[in-house]
Length: 170
Image 1 (spheres, rainbow, N blue to C red):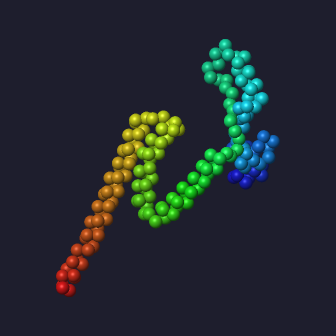
Image 2 (cartoon, one colour):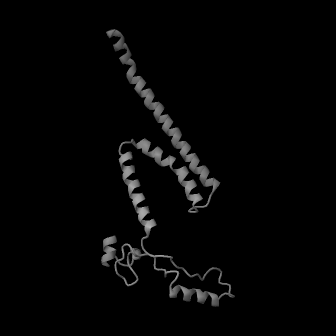
Image 3 (cartoon, helix red, strand yellow):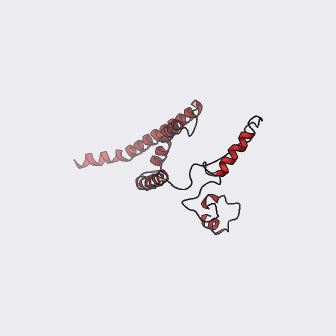
C-alpha cells in the first residue's frame, strides 16, 4: 500500500498523505499531518480569525490545529531503534518459549503497561479497567497453574512403572 500510495495508484481511499510533503513530493522522513506549523503565517492568520470571533459562543466548533515540527527528530530515531531492538530481542527470546509461556508473558505485561499508560497520560485511570486487567491476569495464572499440575501428574503417571523395573535390577 505504501508503494502504491507513493506512486499515486492507491487513490484517495488510502490515508497515507503523511508520506508526502507540502508540494506533493515523497517525504519519507519529513512528512507529517496536513496541519500548518505552529509558527507559520497560516496558523497566525487562523488565530487572528479566532480572536475576531472571541465574543461569539462557538461551543468548541472553531479551533486552530498546528504541529510543532514535521518529520523525524532524535526522539523519533531513538523510538525506532528501541522498537526494532525490542522486536529482535523478543523474537530471539520467544523463539525458545512454549505457547503457554508466551501467553503468560503477554498477559502479565498488561498490568505494568496499563499503569505506565496512565502515568504518562496516554489513558485516564479507571479502577474498573484496572480490576478487569487484574482479573484477566489472575485467570491466566489459574490456567497456568492447572496446566502445570496436569503436566506433573502426567509425568508421575508415566514414571511409576519405571520404579518397579529399577527395583528388579537391584
